[in-house]
Length: 292
Image (tube, rainbow, N blue to C red; front, side, top):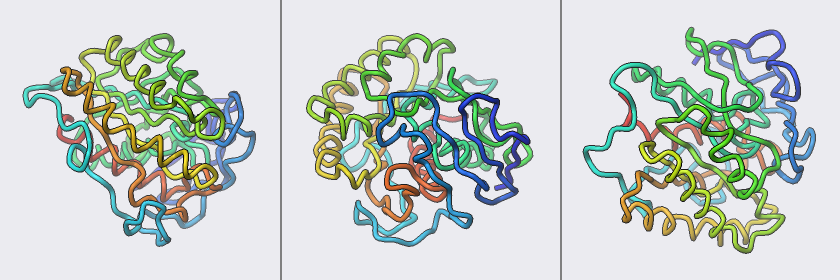
């Protein structure tokens, strides 16, 4: 995968800084956007991505699977797939994907986060996608010789409720075809009690406001500082998805926790380049069959 950045690394303000060289990690970590602070929003907490991170990095995984593996959607406790005839993406033009969440969606620690590798994987399979969102743009300007869509809806430090407060406005200002939801890390150290209920309310709002979109919701990646709370929260998510899928919603579950090694957390909270690439693989497995 070849990437190139604009000279500033971001479009001004507090977005991700750090330039990306062809095929390599950024020379500097992304800085935080404005937010409530905490593990995914403390200023400068992202640190730097390793200069040689790859998707095959070794390390002991919190989830216990070998590094480099990803989980598929549907099997193993997910919400399953929507009805066979469901097609969220248009026949012509790009499929619009909304990355929704906190600083892990923003990409703290690696400029562009999981979106860079996800875009690469789609290009590799000749799928046309773009990203939507209203927050500070970041990421390289080009990936594999194609302009990279630098949009997203990730804000550092935000809890599930704060993310929900952005739905429908401004998050759905441009209605997406697919929504990727990774939310809850900040709740784990602030108010973990009730987090599954709050996530369920967020999912209901997304389903109501974007009924024709595919909602892909994941459990959260390891957060060793609140491991017990993460385990409890993650255990509740598949049932939330299953309940809504059974009611007819276009929603599936993606397992971002299993097999994610702590060696791919750059600062104990945010992924490094290899960790973000791993996340991209899980997201891509979830949406590949729906892309045109």
